Length: 373
Ligand SMILES: NC(=O)c1ccc[n+]([C@@H]2O[C@H](COP(=O)([O-])OP(=O)(O)OC[C@H]3O[C@@H](n4cnc5c(N)ncnc54)[C@H](O)[C@@H]3O)[C@@H](O)[C@H]2O)c1
Ligand SMILES: [Zn+2]
Image (cartoon, rainbow, N blue to C red; front, side, top):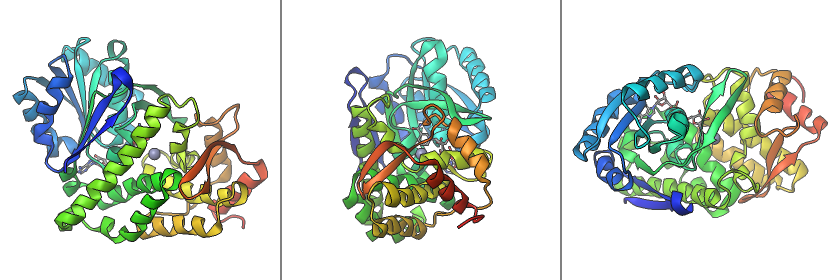
């Protein structure tokens, strides 16, 4: 520790720092990479009281002027209303084109503040300081930013890469266990789509991830850091190969997300956590893969087993199929109203853009709420 991973995107390349106790170093890490010194620190009502001052002090010590904006915690804040309030805050803070947005929090803050940075004055620099496992392994890396509309997740957004990502593992000390578990769903996803050996490592150490951060021994913390670094490395490779999701490579990261996003939309944002919805979606996508793309039933069972061991839900309850179908059709991954799935050929190898025949999909969908076999 600490680990540094580079996202290779030519002039827009940036480092991801992963380690314990990095927040006080944020200013020093950021200063050489940014030309401006006027920063708007965006965080949420849970995270700001915990780490806002540490981050602000570190930025100030490195010569930044820091204004603060705090949104209510939760998925519902990834919306137009909060975005427009942030535009006002950016104006008040005097953010010009050399201004900087610092996103301190989980994926909600990262996506929202990232989109603020992408759209304010047609795009200014931003720094991601992820404080959830999900944000560290997924949302803070790769430059997807955006907000939800009532009719669908992430329907408004932009690709806008951060200048720097700093993931301080000490922030896990206060992260609710349910949020850690939700992040583990995305960790499992990387094993499923691109690294069978990594999947095996997760199986071997599944018990470790259920322990509170404060109870982890030094070597266990190191392993956790390595797992996060491996996820960032895998994501960085995918993003470097297909930044704007054009070749189908980046779309592989959507494994479990076609149904996952539909579950989130159909249940109202926030009731089922993103990672929980993705866990259910991965189990279903694995079952579809057994029928359609050659995944063995044994490997599909291993995926379900690992997710259960990590304390994640593997079945959706009380969801009406028509609502799910409507949500999948509107999803951005749909083309011409036909939902697209990522399916597995085997553990560690995935294919994107798959169309699932209507009757197979409907059978799979109605199984979800137990209303049909
Ligand atoms: N941009 C991308 O590529 C991408 C990828 C995956 C997910 N996402 C998005 O990320 C969002 C989910 O992110 P999330 O799971 O991080 O949710 P989140 O941002 O809502 O954070 C989860 C909860 O934990 C709290 N929290 C965060 N860090 C904490 C800490 N260290 N201690 C105590 N509490 C803490 C938050 O206040 C919140 O209540 C979704 O909107 C999803 O669409 C984006
Ligand atoms: Zn996700």
